[in-house]
Amino acid sequence: MPPRFDFSIAATDGRARTGTIAMRRGEIRTPAFMPVGTSATVKAMKPADVRATGADIILGNTYHLMLRPGAERVARLGGLHAFMGWDRPILTDSGGYQVMSLADLTKRSEEGVAFKSHLDGTRHMLSPERSIEIQRLLGSNITMAFDELVPTTSTREVQAAAMERSMRWARRSRDAFDAAEDHAEGNAIFGIQQGALDEGFRKASADALIDIGFDGYAVGGLAVGEGQEAMFGCLDFAPGQLPADKPRYLMGVGKPDDIVGAVERGIDMFDCVLPTRSGRTGQAFTRSGPINIRNAKFAEDTGPLDPACACNVCSTWSRAYLHHLVRAGEILGAMLMTEHNLAFYQALMADLRSAIAAGGLTAFANDFRAQYRRDKGE
Image 1 (cartoon, rainbow, N blue to C red):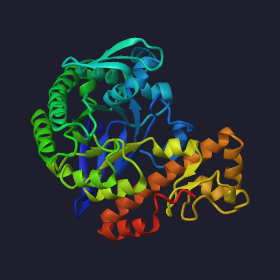
Image 2 (image 1 turned 90 degrees about the horizontal axis):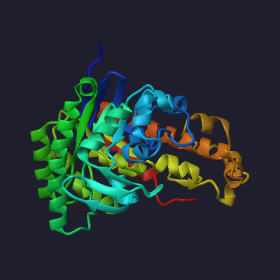
Image 3 (image 1 turned 180 degrees about the vertical axis):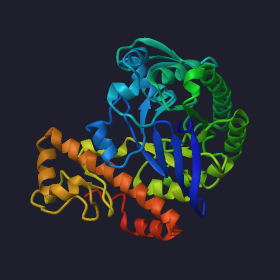
Image 4 (image 1 turned 120 degrees about the horizontal axis):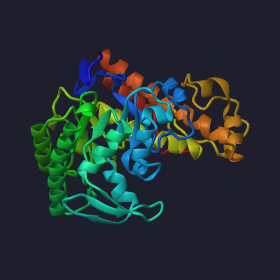
């Protein structure tokens, strides 16, 4: 039988690593980008097409799925994999971020977070134990510990208190995961490092998580408005505080140049709604930066979205056709733009893996940054 969870590093280049996570549902090549399937779907994509872009794993969300259609219902219908038709690994977010950013009238306590649904106003309590239970019912392969997120602009007292509570919740999450023995035997759980931008808080969080023991470790609480420079400043020390022999996951990141910089700093896993959300709004990612296909200058452009891209969309359809579809509000426009963006992200991850394996990451990253202009926005 394949291993429950095994992370092997094949090559390093500076602080960057490339390797493989082996699980019973398949292997995950790292550095890895996980398309976001918040509500049991990667929006505008069929599961087979997500896989065809090169994705080894996708992400689902506890908060959204607990509210609709409900974790117990998903379990009765065979679990998330059968429900949505994805047979490879799934990582589930614990729901903490969404509770604190989307829900109405939240009340935090040591027990957890009481909140009103943003959908219908019904009242719920999400605790570490309930979060883990929901993720088990969904059939998650990589479960995330429940944590408390506060803005990086919060006072030091608030940051410290949230980090310390997150570590207490991490222990409860681990205990709840282990208590469900049948699920724990075949799946994994990651802890989440908190501490905003403070090196001391981050170290205390890392030490607490290591003491508990997890299969992998996430760097949480970033990409929430602090800017790339501040995020990279934190990543200059935070990943190194976590075990070198375990995967490191930067939650909610991000833009292509964010990913390249984070890989250089030792991150192995990423997720972000950006490629799918941007695809639905007419933004395409290219090696020279993002473009807005709605722009009038593309109305008669017969070239591909990205001349450097070999994806199905770039090989088949012109910028002019995609411009027409998006401007006309045709569903196919959102589908093709999303497919290209996901293929672009997966091609970037493949290039990063190859560059690390060849010992050429610095040259690749510098060349990428020289071409990529994130504010291009044509």
